[in-house]
Amino acid sequence: MTVETDPESQVEPPRQSLSTAAARNLATTTKSAPQMQEITSRWLLRMLPWVETKGGAYRVNRRLSYTVGDGHIEFVQDGADVRVIPRELGELALLRGFEDDEALKTIAARCVQRDFRAGEVLVEHDAPADRIHLIAHGRVKQTSVGKYGDEVVVAVLADGDRFGENALLDADATWDYTVTAETAGTLLTLSRADFAAVMGAAPSLQDHIQRFSSLPLQRQNRHGEAEIAMSAGHTGEAELPGAFVDYELKPREYELSVAQTVLRVHSRVADLYNGPMNQTEEQLRLTIEALRERQEHELINNREFGLLHNAAFKQRIQTHSGPPTPDDLDELLCRRRGTRLFLAHPRTIAAIGREWNARGIYPDHADIDGHHVPAWRGVPILPCNKIPISKESTSSILAMRTGEDNQGVIGLRQTGLPEEYEPGLSVRFMGINEQAIISYLVTTYYSAAILVPDALGVLENVQIARRSD
Image 1 (tube, helix red, strand yellow):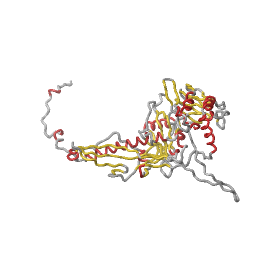
Image 2 (cartoon, rainbow, N blue to C red):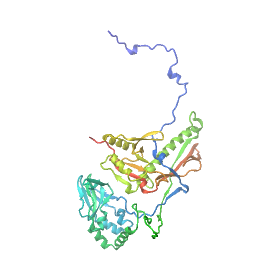
Image 3 (cartoon, one colour):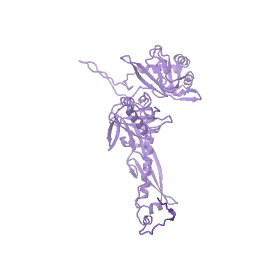
Image 4 (cartoon, rainbow, N blue to C red):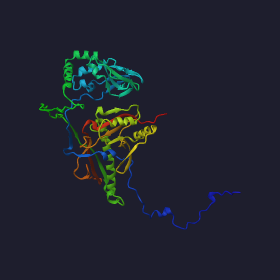
């Protein structure tokens, strides 16, 4: 039989040695350096080649290009009604540079809204094309008949894209593809007859269209650049064509941006509490980490020079089905030579892994600075949590070529700053105020430049949420 005893009735035996709790009063505590959850791997800052930018600006000189009007179109929504912003019509090739606001407003007013449902056929192959379609919201797929009679996907279009632009001027135009809605959405259409009516009443539009029609007469290569005339395969004393390389008259300049903060440390803390760790150094270390995190965020998201906003529209593609499949990554790779890296949010990389697993594909791996990272076709896929995720659980994947020699993406900075602490980052003493607080100005200057449009590609609207099935 087991006899239970009352714990309160038990008497603790006399202690024969010093307790550990009392002993800790005389012990030296081993401490960690201050930790910070915000710190990430910052692969973009590590992989970008940094170019010295004297004078605070970097000018990108390119060959003259005749490519016009390849931007996305924006709309305004009033309940269920959608209207195109008149000035946004300037993104169409035939209206690029047209400045008559009244004529643009008239054209915008003649655009007719059309709501479509998933699976609906919007246009059919070989049918007469008599109108342009502006996609306000939703995804559509362009398909055509392949060489062997099978259906092939030409392109996937989404918000801000359009199709049928040549139908406004060509009376004999036909559709080279079938367009099918992949999701429900809304588009605006403008018929050739309505456009002709506006043009008949607006002499300024007539003059502009006449000038636009002369642009194709300019000799240009497949990239839209002014062609360099030359002769090849001739014999004898053939007359050789003269040539020169034409440049852009107003090349883009990237000015260095700035991220700054003022670090404040009380003199009493700096004087008395520096063992075993220097308080000022630890405060400065964490401040610099936060500044570098903000720097990478700006390089991705800043509207002036951020990679997501400055990628050429022709280098932005849509996924074929939503999730990031191997086919989508191949489509992204084939649009540029020498892709150095993919950049994606960690959740997007997880979605890529799920698609690989679903297809029974074992991915490659690459070793970068001692880190084993996943790769596709030998191109490493690096994480970057600065790439935004929308409320619909979609994100983007960037693919880039890097370096000046490769006409790629480069980082810009200036070194040799006064009181420089790290390359391109300075820590300047600002003095001590009447409350005995020491202040330091921490500053870093940076930017990024895309030397040629195909140096950077973006796979947009990547669905990263796990499927319910």
